[in-house]
Image (cartoon, rainbow, N blue to C red; front, top):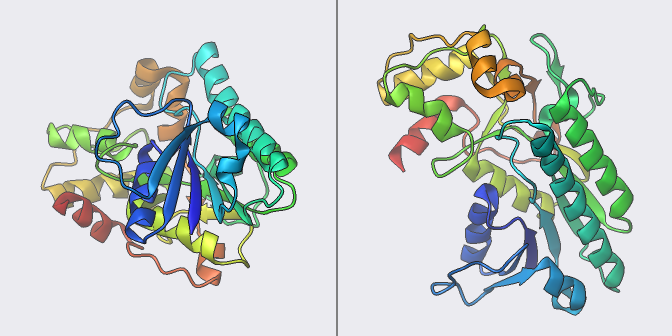
Length: 301
């Protein structure tokens, strides 16, 4: 198979690239610029810039899937310029993919479009699945609604999967190293009330889920990329303490977090209990459905 990965140099993209290369597939990673070093590149792996792909769309002929993971991280201070970068990076990538698809006579049969569970809004009581309505109530949900709306308009004539991702747990990047750090320093504890839900997924499982969505023609539209057993912030912290043998005792008050990181604190102080109903209905099996084995796996890596 031949796969295009936009944002392939990112946290999830690197793992997906390696997974598909091990499966014997041909991978084209698309980004703003060529990587600085490709001395150990795999023979089935190539790199293209958006400009080169726009000039030579024929390089994408025969692709069996396109995966769009590109976009500036939400983990930055939400200044006016930061918010603009977060929004524009997502919309510009969708626009570039739309132009590519329009230039291709034979389009990839499926596009996997990165999204986020922020689109459901936040709640301490409600449970969300793919049938839940969109609820725009803050900056993250505003971004995701615009992102998905742009994708719906742009990707015509192909099967589209909107991968609504929760907190992805991995050692190399993402949120988990930052969440674990206070525990490693002996100052771990709940954040705010600790009652806010954390819908998570192991990096291994999100990569497997992307592959599953590509290989399963019956899956389209929103797909929640979360493990089937979300936990509260308090329970998540206690489990880090248990697995890593560190104390869970030092709470971080909401006002202190807001002072430190500003509006970005909303991600940590609010949450959603999100279930992967569509993946389960189609027969996807999670390697790490519950938190303790996932953290033990990360500790052992």
